[in-house]
Image: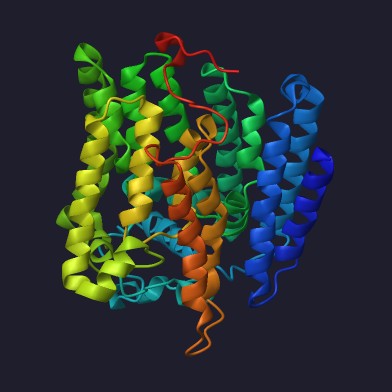
Length: 440
């Protein structure tokens, strides 16, 4: 039954994108949710099979199946990216650095860059009037992929695939260190979110995942210096990683905390320094614009914006998020629990929740699978209803689909009573050996 569900999942995934149609329509919503249901079914069956954990052959078969599915989604559509055009910005930034121009200084449509524009690349970049928003280490990887591939899109996709492989290896290590069943890796291998947003759309967040997961492994192995360096690398690929830094910092004590802070600070300085020297105060790029204006697929913020207007709702949501994060830091709970609560608060209060942002919760979610977060990892794909297609003016289905994402999410939170993160099989926390928690 388990292999049958996995096989059906692969067929539906390939049907969804291979070969890719010029414009995805309403069938994407249906098939993406079918994939989510199948993925939950695969995990629910596997976690109850004791022999699955011990059978190396089963793991090899599932990993091969997942690899073939990813290859089909990555290469079958070619250069067609109907869900996101972010990858063209990655290539453009890499091109700018290769030409000796800081991507933080000029937007793609600047007159100063007219001689550097390429047909089929510059005209596909989203928001060409804005400078890049991506941090320095991300820029280094953009340059590396451009240098290796000569500006070809496939070069970044290959890099993304390599980094996913590193992430999977790190996730196995993270599960082993906590004595969790290896079957939980199926939450990643058969996640529609991972397949669609990374194997297909190739968002840069995948580059940060090996650093994030390995930093969590360093907590189990009592390596504060390495932990600080690795989480800094994750932050310098995507600023969303800053959400976890205070909790990792507070986890350490005494000299260990100092080593964490020192390595974190040195990594920030050394990686940022070349870009600060070339761009000066503009090294943050369009980040201030993003924080001040962007909004998409928000939940509580959308309600507040409707009643109070953006001028009041945006700072109020930011303040509530800061208070929520502070509350989690003061709670007496295991680190993994705090990180999950912190990310849940982000989901509730952020002004912008792109589907691919949710990958940041997976390392913690696999150690402690939670029903609300598992739900939104699949349902968030419904947010594509009006992002690129189904732009029928006055179409009433948009609000209904947004409600379909968040009403079950908040219902699952409320049903769990005092524990707003309903657990699927167990507590799942860091430092289990030291606290005497034995996991099976």
